[in-house]
Every structure is written in C-alpha cells, then in structure tokens.
Image (cartoon, rainbow, N blue to C red; front, side, top):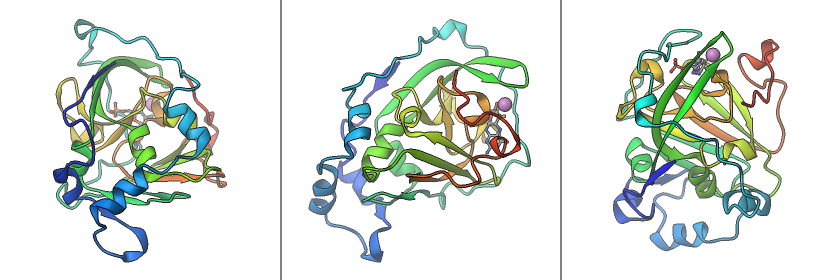
Length: 236
Ligand SMILES: Nc1nc2c(c(=O)[nH]1)N[C@H]1C(S)=C(S)[C@@H](COP(=O)(O)O)O[C@H]1N2
Ligand SMILES: [Mo]
C-alpha cells in the first residue's frame, strides 16, 4: 500500500476553512476547538485497531502492470445518480462526539492512500484495480466514535445501503476512493466517493456514498443485498 502524504495533517488552514461541523448548529468552530477534539483520547477498542496495537493483517497487493482496466464491470442495481460535486457533502454521524459534514475539498485535503487490489463480485467476475482516496480510519478518527460503536452504515445516493463491522471499516486498506487506475473516479464507478477494500466482497463496496453512520447496533435493515439473503460479513 502506498501512502502518499500530500498534506501531512488534516488540520491545515486550507483543510479547516471548508470544514463544517454539524454540532448543535453552533457555526464555524474555532481552530482550538477542533484541535482539542481531535486530540481527545479515542474509543479504546477502535483506537487500538487504528493504532495497530492489534495489527490488522495487510492483504498483499498487485503491481501496476497487473491492473486489468477492462475487467471492472459496472454493476449498479438502479440508475447512476446525478450528484453535483460542488454541493456534495459527506455526512458522518451516529454515536460520535464529532459529527462531520465534509466537502470533496475537505476529503482531498486528507492524506491520499493508493492500493492495487482485486475486486471480487459474487456474480462470478473479478478485476485488479488501483484505487486511491482517504483511509476510512482517518474519517472514523475525526468523528470520535463512542466506546460502544461496533458498526458503520454506508448510505448511497442511489438508495443503496450496506453495513460493515468496525474492524473492517478501520482496516488500513479500506478506502473512500475518488481515483481509479490513476484517474479521477468515473461516475459509473461511484464518483465522487466510493468504498474500496480488499477485505470485503463487491456488494459491500458502496458507490456514491453520502452518509456514514457509526453505531453500536444494526437495525433490521443491514444492506440492500444483505436484506435479500446475501451474507452480511462478506469477507474475502
Ligand atoms: N450505490 C451502489 N453501490 C454499489 C452497487 C450498487 O448497485 N449501488 N453495486 C455493488 C456491486 S454488487 C459491485 S460488484 C460493485 C461494482 O462496482 P463497479 O460498478 O464500480 O464495478 O459495486 C457495489 N456497490
Ligand atoms: Mo457485485
């Protein structure tokens, strides 16, 4: 996995200026407020996963020459949603101290991580793809989940939804991707933002993600395919 630290820290002034917190409608927080929140101790279980106190196994990656640009088949249960990237905001909420509302500019100010992995669809095809974007763990860390958080819900603009266990969510190779094979992520593949991870099957890799809810319990609805009998964990 190649971690390209475009900007070492999220809390650069440019990253901060576009950052809006949803917290109690109190307007733009002061720099100190955010720094204070980010440096608070995290939920210990999630923290130990993120800090690799219990190191999570890295899935071996492929080389640039192994990328299969034609093999990734667009697989969309409905229509491709129309998203205005300027107005687009990613909501991170649920049982967290620090709900977030992030623009694509905010997200692109976070460290860029790139990986070459195999995407596996249960319908019988697979593709080696390079994805680049922000690690989900960065987002989880910023949101400051409560100690009892065990799951993440991913809600998409096309009505799709899925839920993940928190360990897979903060796995170092679970990305919110906005690039595919070195280029801007195509709309059909989930632009502006989609999940990409070598630890889960294709139907867990939500495209057009607009909302991530960190929660302690799953509801009756676990995912679009999961609710129709597909396995929930869907690990690779
Ligand atoms: N929002 C949304 N995400 C989705 C889907 C979908 O229909 N809607 N299909 C899933 C399935 S089954 C697969 S295999 C992959 C396909 O990703 P691709 O279309 O970029 O190849 O997206 C997953 N994520
Ligand atoms: Mo799939």
